[in-house]
Length: 116
Image (cartoon, rainbow, N blue to C red; front, side, top):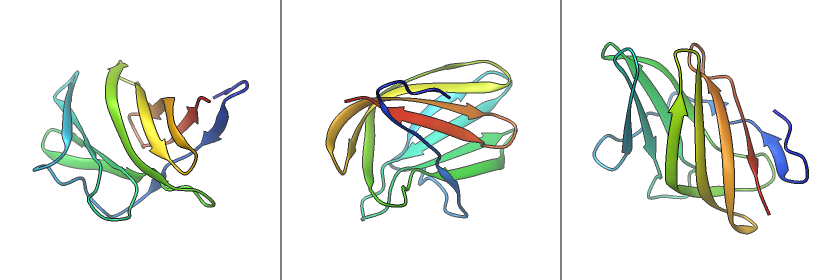
């Protein structure tokens, strides 16, 4: 993913943590998939978990090595059978900025940019 003058590209990391369905934003995807996005209540970064046919496919954490993403909000999701595309606003170490993310639906590989 090319970010131009924006910050990034960054990549969320694979995690064993799961989005908490009681506080997650839930997006229904094609082919019976569900993407849950959890802005955790503690100091951890947002978790994104994909479920297909009721089974966890992958879970990723938007943690950065040198900075911190607190939350993402005003999330819009588009995509197809292969790629999930998110646009959002992020609260992170340098304030609140718009962002875009592309996620490979099959394995959770991803990249995202934050705009200043």
